[in-house]
Length: 348
Image (cartoon, rainbow, N blue to C red; front, side, top):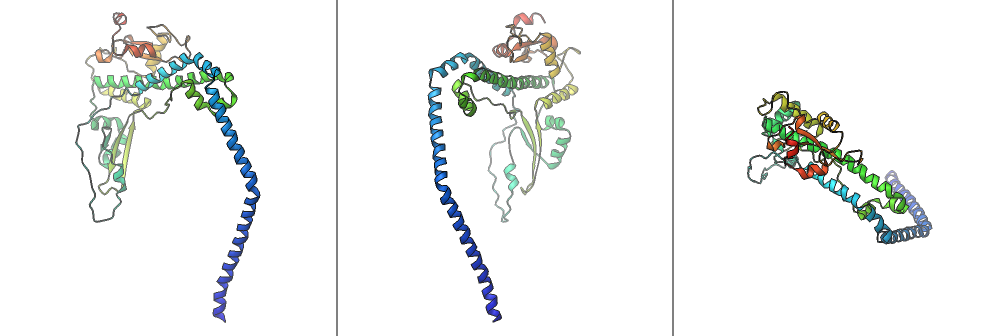
Protein backbone atom coordinates (compact mmCIF):
# COMPACT_ATOMS: atom_id res chain seq x y z
CA UNK A 1 0.00 0.00 0.00
CA UNK A 2 2.83 2.42 0.88
CA UNK A 3 4.40 1.85 -2.54
CA UNK A 4 1.15 2.71 -4.33
CA UNK A 5 0.93 6.01 -2.42
CA UNK A 6 4.43 7.01 -3.52
CA UNK A 7 3.53 6.35 -7.16
CA UNK A 8 0.15 8.09 -7.14
CA UNK A 9 1.29 11.32 -5.46
CA UNK A 10 3.43 12.53 -8.44
CA UNK A 11 0.57 11.57 -10.77
CA UNK A 12 -1.83 13.71 -8.76
CA UNK A 13 0.59 16.67 -8.92
CA UNK A 14 1.11 16.25 -12.67
CA UNK A 15 -2.63 16.00 -13.18
CA UNK A 16 -3.20 19.20 -11.21
CA UNK A 17 -0.54 21.02 -13.26
CA UNK A 18 -2.11 19.84 -16.51
CA UNK A 19 -5.55 20.92 -15.33
CA UNK A 20 -4.36 24.37 -14.30
CA UNK A 21 -2.40 24.73 -17.57
CA UNK A 22 -5.52 23.85 -19.55
CA UNK A 23 -7.56 26.47 -17.71
CA UNK A 24 -4.89 29.14 -18.31
CA UNK A 25 -4.68 28.21 -22.00
CA UNK A 26 -8.47 28.41 -22.38
CA UNK A 27 -8.44 31.81 -20.65
CA UNK A 28 -5.73 33.12 -23.02
CA UNK A 29 -7.60 31.81 -26.08
CA UNK A 30 -10.78 33.42 -24.81
CA UNK A 31 -9.05 36.78 -24.34
CA UNK A 32 -7.47 36.61 -27.80
CA UNK A 33 -10.81 35.77 -29.35
CA UNK A 34 -12.32 38.77 -27.61
CA UNK A 35 -9.51 41.10 -28.73
CA UNK A 36 -9.05 39.68 -32.21
CA UNK A 37 -11.56 41.93 -33.93
CA UNK A 38 -10.49 45.19 -32.16
CA UNK A 39 -6.80 44.41 -32.79
CA UNK A 40 -7.51 43.69 -36.43
CA UNK A 41 -9.39 46.99 -36.74
CA UNK A 42 -6.61 48.95 -35.00
CA UNK A 43 -3.89 47.29 -37.10
CA UNK A 44 -5.76 47.91 -40.33
CA UNK A 45 -6.37 51.54 -39.36
CA UNK A 46 -2.66 52.12 -38.65
CA UNK A 47 -1.67 50.58 -41.98
CA UNK A 48 -4.19 52.75 -43.84
CA UNK A 49 -3.01 55.91 -42.04
CA UNK A 50 0.65 55.13 -42.83
CA UNK A 51 -0.22 54.42 -46.46
CA UNK A 52 -2.09 57.73 -46.75
CA UNK A 53 0.81 59.57 -45.07
CA UNK A 54 3.39 58.06 -47.45
CA UNK A 55 1.25 59.12 -50.41
CA UNK A 56 0.90 62.63 -48.93
CA UNK A 57 4.66 62.76 -48.34
CA UNK A 58 5.41 61.67 -51.92
CA UNK A 59 3.00 64.21 -53.41
CA UNK A 60 4.33 67.04 -51.24
CA UNK A 61 8.00 66.51 -52.15
CA UNK A 62 7.01 66.49 -55.84
CA UNK A 63 4.92 69.64 -55.53
CA UNK A 64 5.84 73.02 -57.02
CA UNK A 65 5.49 74.61 -53.58
CA UNK A 66 8.25 72.43 -52.14
CA UNK A 67 10.43 72.92 -55.22
CA UNK A 68 10.12 76.68 -54.77
CA UNK A 69 11.23 76.44 -51.11
CA UNK A 70 14.17 74.28 -52.16
CA UNK A 71 15.20 76.76 -54.83
CA UNK A 72 14.99 79.70 -52.42
CA UNK A 73 17.53 78.14 -50.04
CA UNK A 74 19.60 76.31 -52.65
CA UNK A 75 22.69 78.52 -52.34
CA UNK A 76 22.67 78.20 -48.53
CA UNK A 77 22.51 74.42 -48.75
CA UNK A 78 25.29 74.35 -51.36
CA UNK A 79 27.38 76.47 -49.01
CA UNK A 80 26.78 73.95 -46.20
CA UNK A 81 27.73 71.05 -48.45
CA UNK A 82 30.90 72.83 -49.60
CA UNK A 83 31.85 73.50 -45.99
CA UNK A 84 31.24 69.84 -45.23
CA UNK A 85 33.67 68.85 -48.02
CA UNK A 86 36.24 71.23 -46.57
CA UNK A 87 35.83 69.76 -43.08
CA UNK A 88 36.38 66.27 -44.51
CA UNK A 89 39.61 67.49 -46.13
CA UNK A 90 40.77 68.98 -42.81
CA UNK A 91 39.97 65.77 -40.97
CA UNK A 92 42.04 63.80 -43.48
CA UNK A 93 45.05 66.09 -43.14
CA UNK A 94 46.93 63.75 -40.82
CA UNK A 95 49.77 62.02 -42.65
CA UNK A 96 49.98 58.50 -41.29
CA UNK A 97 53.51 57.53 -40.31
CA UNK A 98 54.47 54.49 -42.32
CA UNK A 99 56.48 51.51 -41.15
CA UNK A 100 58.60 49.19 -43.18
CA UNK A 101 56.62 46.61 -45.14
CA UNK A 102 57.16 43.28 -43.41
CA UNK A 103 55.30 41.11 -45.94
CA UNK A 104 52.38 38.76 -45.37
CA UNK A 105 52.07 35.45 -43.55
CA UNK A 106 49.39 33.12 -42.24
CA UNK A 107 49.58 31.82 -38.70
CA UNK A 108 47.97 28.46 -37.94
CA UNK A 109 47.63 26.80 -34.54
CA UNK A 110 48.38 23.07 -34.98
CA UNK A 111 48.48 22.38 -31.24
CA UNK A 112 47.12 19.03 -30.04
CA UNK A 113 45.45 20.84 -27.16
CA UNK A 114 42.05 22.43 -27.51
CA UNK A 115 43.02 25.97 -26.49
CA UNK A 116 40.70 28.75 -27.69
CA UNK A 117 43.48 31.38 -27.86
CA UNK A 118 40.72 33.99 -28.22
CA UNK A 119 43.07 36.96 -27.71
CA UNK A 120 44.89 36.15 -30.97
CA UNK A 121 41.91 37.73 -32.70
CA UNK A 122 42.99 41.06 -31.18
CA UNK A 123 46.48 40.85 -32.68
CA UNK A 124 46.56 43.68 -35.21
CA UNK A 125 49.42 44.63 -37.52
CA UNK A 126 49.25 48.19 -38.87
CA UNK A 127 51.51 51.23 -38.90
CA UNK A 128 49.63 52.60 -35.87
CA UNK A 129 49.84 49.46 -33.76
CA UNK A 130 53.03 48.32 -32.06
CA UNK A 131 53.02 44.73 -30.80
CA UNK A 132 55.20 44.51 -27.75
CA UNK A 133 55.66 43.10 -24.27
CA UNK A 134 53.32 43.77 -21.37
CA UNK A 135 56.09 45.84 -19.75
CA UNK A 136 56.28 48.23 -22.71
CA UNK A 137 52.47 48.62 -22.63
CA UNK A 138 52.69 49.55 -18.98
CA UNK A 139 55.56 52.01 -19.48
CA UNK A 140 53.81 53.58 -22.48
CA UNK A 141 50.81 54.35 -20.27
CA UNK A 142 53.15 56.19 -17.87
CA UNK A 143 55.17 58.09 -20.52
CA UNK A 144 52.97 58.10 -23.65
CA UNK A 145 54.79 60.76 -25.70
CA UNK A 146 58.25 59.33 -25.04
CA UNK A 147 57.17 55.86 -26.14
CA UNK A 148 55.15 57.22 -29.05
CA UNK A 149 58.27 58.84 -30.50
CA UNK A 150 60.53 55.89 -29.73
CA UNK A 151 58.47 53.03 -31.09
CA UNK A 152 56.66 54.76 -33.96
CA UNK A 153 59.78 56.40 -35.39
CA UNK A 154 58.63 59.97 -34.82
CA UNK A 155 61.79 62.05 -35.12
CA UNK A 156 62.22 64.83 -32.59
CA UNK A 157 63.09 67.68 -34.93
CA UNK A 158 61.73 71.01 -36.08
CA UNK A 159 60.12 69.60 -39.24
CA UNK A 160 58.16 67.10 -37.14
CA UNK A 161 56.96 69.84 -34.82
CA UNK A 162 55.80 71.92 -37.79
CA UNK A 163 53.93 68.93 -39.22
CA UNK A 164 52.06 68.27 -35.99
CA UNK A 165 51.30 71.99 -35.67
CA UNK A 166 49.72 71.85 -39.11
CA UNK A 167 47.63 68.84 -38.09
CA UNK A 168 46.52 70.57 -34.89
CA UNK A 169 45.57 73.68 -36.86
CA UNK A 170 43.51 71.62 -39.32
CA UNK A 171 41.86 69.50 -36.63
CA UNK A 172 40.97 72.60 -34.59
CA UNK A 173 39.38 74.19 -37.67
CA UNK A 174 37.51 70.94 -38.41
CA UNK A 175 36.07 70.79 -34.89
CA UNK A 176 34.97 74.42 -35.04
CA UNK A 177 33.61 73.87 -38.54
CA UNK A 178 31.49 70.94 -37.34
CA UNK A 179 29.78 73.14 -34.76
CA UNK A 180 29.25 76.03 -37.18
CA UNK A 181 27.92 73.67 -39.85
CA UNK A 182 25.45 72.13 -37.42
CA UNK A 183 24.28 75.58 -36.28
CA UNK A 184 23.91 76.82 -39.87
CA UNK A 185 21.88 73.77 -40.85
CA UNK A 186 19.52 74.26 -37.90
CA UNK A 187 19.07 77.95 -38.76
CA UNK A 188 18.16 77.11 -42.37
CA UNK A 189 15.60 74.51 -41.26
CA UNK A 190 14.18 76.82 -38.60
CA UNK A 191 13.67 79.60 -41.17
CA UNK A 192 11.52 77.39 -43.40
CA UNK A 193 9.72 75.58 -40.58
CA UNK A 194 6.54 77.66 -40.97
CA UNK A 195 6.38 76.81 -44.69
CA UNK A 196 6.65 73.03 -44.19
CA UNK A 197 3.62 70.91 -43.18
CA UNK A 198 3.78 70.08 -39.47
CA UNK A 199 3.63 66.31 -40.04
CA UNK A 200 6.51 66.41 -42.52
CA UNK A 201 8.70 68.56 -40.25
CA UNK A 202 8.04 66.46 -37.14
CA UNK A 203 8.04 62.92 -38.51
CA UNK A 204 10.04 63.07 -41.75
CA UNK A 205 12.82 65.53 -40.93
CA UNK A 206 15.59 63.29 -42.24
CA UNK A 207 13.74 62.79 -45.52
CA UNK A 208 13.09 66.55 -45.63
CA UNK A 209 16.82 67.28 -45.30
CA UNK A 210 17.61 64.85 -48.10
CA UNK A 211 14.96 66.28 -50.41
CA UNK A 212 16.22 69.81 -49.74
CA UNK A 213 19.69 68.73 -50.87
CA UNK A 214 21.61 68.46 -47.60
CA UNK A 215 24.39 65.91 -47.66
CA UNK A 216 24.88 63.46 -44.81
CA UNK A 217 27.05 65.31 -42.29
CA UNK A 218 29.40 63.30 -40.07
CA UNK A 219 29.85 64.90 -36.66
CA UNK A 220 31.75 62.10 -34.91
CA UNK A 221 35.28 62.31 -33.48
CA UNK A 222 36.56 58.98 -34.78
CA UNK A 223 39.02 60.59 -37.19
CA UNK A 224 41.56 61.41 -34.47
CA UNK A 225 44.60 59.13 -35.00
CA UNK A 226 45.11 56.50 -32.32
CA UNK A 227 48.47 54.84 -31.68
CA UNK A 228 48.24 51.52 -29.92
CA UNK A 229 50.71 49.50 -27.89
CA UNK A 230 49.50 45.93 -27.77
CA UNK A 231 50.62 42.81 -25.95
CA UNK A 232 49.10 39.42 -26.75
CA UNK A 233 50.43 36.40 -24.89
CA UNK A 234 51.98 33.54 -26.83
CA UNK A 235 49.16 31.28 -25.72
CA UNK A 236 46.59 33.82 -26.92
CA UNK A 237 44.73 33.79 -23.62
CA UNK A 238 45.54 37.28 -22.36
CA UNK A 239 46.24 40.72 -23.79
CA UNK A 240 47.09 44.27 -22.71
CA UNK A 241 46.54 47.51 -24.63
CA UNK A 242 47.67 51.12 -24.27
CA UNK A 243 45.97 53.58 -26.63
CA UNK A 244 47.29 57.09 -27.31
CA UNK A 245 44.63 59.18 -29.05
CA UNK A 246 45.90 62.38 -30.64
CA UNK A 247 42.79 64.48 -30.15
CA UNK A 248 42.93 68.28 -29.92
CA UNK A 249 43.99 68.35 -26.27
CA UNK A 250 46.61 65.60 -26.61
CA UNK A 251 47.99 67.06 -29.84
CA UNK A 252 48.59 70.39 -28.14
CA UNK A 253 50.35 68.66 -25.23
CA UNK A 254 52.44 66.63 -27.69
CA UNK A 255 53.51 69.82 -29.46
CA UNK A 256 54.70 71.28 -26.16
CA UNK A 257 56.55 68.03 -25.48
CA UNK A 258 58.36 68.17 -28.83
CA UNK A 259 59.08 71.87 -28.40
CA UNK A 260 60.86 71.24 -25.09
CA UNK A 261 63.17 68.67 -26.71
CA UNK A 262 64.02 70.37 -30.01
CA UNK A 263 67.05 72.55 -30.56
CA UNK A 264 65.86 75.03 -33.15
CA UNK A 265 67.97 75.76 -36.19
CA UNK A 266 65.73 77.61 -38.65
CA UNK A 267 63.97 80.01 -36.33
CA UNK A 268 65.47 82.92 -34.45
CA UNK A 269 65.16 82.55 -30.70
CA UNK A 270 62.08 84.34 -29.40
CA UNK A 271 60.30 84.57 -32.77
CA UNK A 272 58.90 81.08 -32.98
CA UNK A 273 55.53 80.36 -31.41
CA UNK A 274 53.50 77.19 -30.95
CA UNK A 275 50.23 76.65 -32.78
CA UNK A 276 47.95 76.52 -29.77
CA UNK A 277 44.30 77.43 -29.20
CA UNK A 278 45.42 80.66 -27.51
CA UNK A 279 47.58 81.66 -30.48
CA UNK A 280 44.78 80.90 -32.95
CA UNK A 281 42.41 83.11 -31.00
CA UNK A 282 45.04 85.84 -30.68
CA UNK A 283 45.51 86.02 -34.46
CA UNK A 284 41.74 86.16 -35.07
CA UNK A 285 41.39 88.96 -32.55
CA UNK A 286 44.30 90.84 -34.11
CA UNK A 287 42.65 90.56 -37.54
CA UNK A 288 39.28 91.58 -36.10
CA UNK A 289 37.70 88.21 -37.07
CA UNK A 290 38.01 89.24 -40.69
CA UNK A 291 39.44 87.36 -43.67
CA UNK A 292 42.53 89.23 -44.80
CA UNK A 293 41.93 88.23 -48.40
CA UNK A 294 38.21 88.74 -49.15
CA UNK A 295 37.47 90.89 -46.04
CA UNK A 296 34.37 88.92 -45.02
CA UNK A 297 33.92 88.78 -41.25
CA UNK A 298 31.79 87.07 -38.63
CA UNK A 299 29.63 90.20 -38.52
CA UNK A 300 28.75 89.56 -42.18
CA UNK A 301 28.19 85.82 -41.79
CA UNK A 302 27.32 84.54 -38.33
CA UNK A 303 28.47 80.94 -38.80
CA UNK A 304 31.63 81.79 -40.73
CA UNK A 305 34.54 79.41 -40.29
CA UNK A 306 37.76 81.39 -39.91
CA UNK A 307 41.08 79.58 -40.12
CA UNK A 308 44.66 80.47 -39.29
CA UNK A 309 46.95 80.36 -42.31
CA UNK A 310 50.74 80.39 -42.60
CA UNK A 311 51.48 83.18 -45.08
CA UNK A 312 54.71 81.43 -46.03
CA UNK A 313 53.67 77.77 -45.76
CA UNK A 314 55.57 75.41 -43.48
CA UNK A 315 56.41 73.34 -46.56
CA UNK A 316 58.13 76.41 -48.06
CA UNK A 317 60.24 77.12 -45.00
CA UNK A 318 57.80 79.30 -43.08
CA UNK A 319 57.50 79.06 -39.32
CA UNK A 320 54.76 79.47 -36.77
CA UNK A 321 55.15 83.08 -35.71
CA UNK A 322 52.66 85.90 -35.32
CA UNK A 323 53.94 87.85 -38.33
CA UNK A 324 53.69 84.71 -40.51
CA UNK A 325 50.09 83.98 -39.53
CA UNK A 326 46.90 85.48 -40.89
CA UNK A 327 43.17 84.95 -40.61
CA UNK A 328 41.43 83.57 -43.70
CA UNK A 329 37.88 82.41 -44.22
CA UNK A 330 37.63 78.73 -45.09
CA UNK A 331 36.86 79.48 -48.73
CA UNK A 332 39.97 81.61 -49.25
CA UNK A 333 42.15 79.21 -47.29
CA UNK A 334 40.86 76.31 -49.34
CA UNK A 335 41.79 77.97 -52.62
CA UNK A 336 45.16 79.23 -51.36
CA UNK A 337 46.57 75.81 -50.49
CA UNK A 338 50.36 75.86 -50.20
CA UNK A 339 50.78 78.96 -52.39
CA UNK A 340 52.57 82.05 -51.08
CA UNK A 341 50.50 85.21 -51.35
CA UNK A 342 53.09 87.74 -52.55
CA UNK A 343 51.33 90.81 -51.20
CA UNK A 344 51.44 89.38 -47.68
CA UNK A 345 54.87 87.79 -47.93
CA UNK A 346 56.41 91.16 -48.82
CA UNK A 347 55.20 92.52 -45.49
CA UNK A 348 57.16 89.98 -43.48
